[in-house]
Image (cartoon, rainbow, N blue to C red; front, side, top):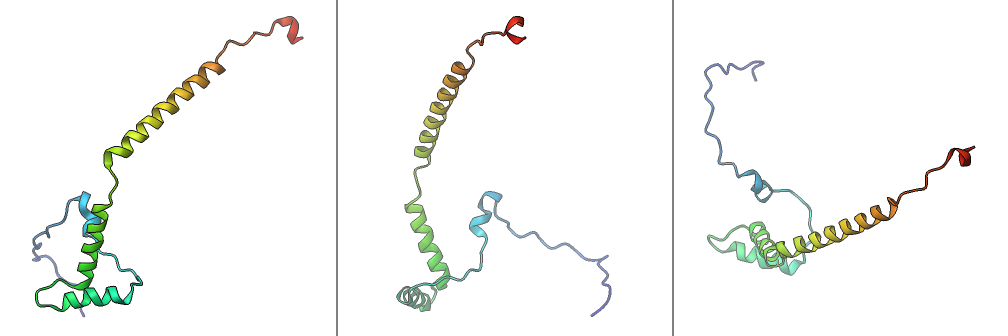
Length: 113
């Protein structure tokens, strides 16, 4: 192996088609250790064994993605709940502020001495 390489005549290769930043998590693979029931593993591996089928890990990933899509919470429902909570909290803070800001009696010079 050389100690130095000459890159003066090197050409930059074409950029890969990178996903948009909003979809980076979807396209990032992470290696984990997971324990699956043997019957589930056999099911996905047998499906993957047929010609032209996707690998079993991809099939499991797709099944999980379908489950998540079917059970994703209503995006508008939570926002309404949060908005109502924030409004009520603002009302309570305003009430507290009004109660606390009642004019206090000023101490006279005679009472301070």
